[in-house]
Length: 359
Image 1 (cartoon, rainbow, N blue to C red):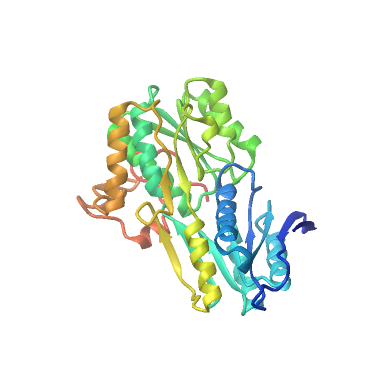
Image 2 (cartoon, rainbow, N blue to C red):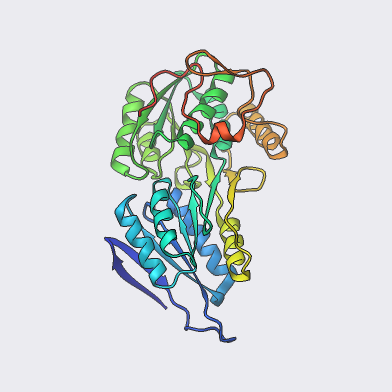
């Protein structure tokens, strides 16, 4: 049975089994806190697919709780606290802006395990996890550089945090590599999910001459704006966004959280859960590249697929020198690969990008 209740201005959907299981043990309760609605078609949608995979995998041994559209701030702390008070054993907090709230609530509930997505603060009962989205951005940049005719690529950025800056840099490096004339125009939306703002940003970029739009925001609104404009290429963000394929959406980055969520839930059930930091990419399958459609020229599709396989095998890293910083200072020498510490805290553009990173 499923009940729905109002909690801190968001909707809490609590899947209830029939109480204790046949063996007398109470089911493990796993909570999920979402920054957007489960129907956003992107980031939150894929996290919820992971939640559903947990339900399918464990059956009556697990109950799941989720709260959608929770703002980053005091509301998030209230939601997490309420989940813990209602008996959650494990809580996944799925947005960067939940970091401090996760730490605060975890301190009050030391017996509850917390998993924070894309953050860097840990505790004895707080793990962190993220995906190497920049690997997918490199593939998108490669395709975009080939497909642009105006040589202007638009990028809708959410917030000026390292994760987003890494993505911009990775896409630009690989677009520039195949098209030296390419130019990036970046619009900061200051939101993860706001279809109106995202559509406006896409429209502005298209009016400025962009015929390829990349996004690090969660809704399908940029896809719809590109579709309306006509000959503008887009890429799915966080999920396949298949309804806009085969064009304008010619491929996508797909976040596959299900294996991680299942493994971490199993660790709680087994009593083996420990605080860890996970940062996986294409090779382990946390980052997937959606089908590259036939709207992409065959030779470009082949070279993109070769890049994917090279990253999967470890033969290629998207941040391999020679690379300079935006101010022209040396960063990576020929053949040198960026270390994870620099990537995790990235706060600079690479050479060739224009404009300043907002503070």
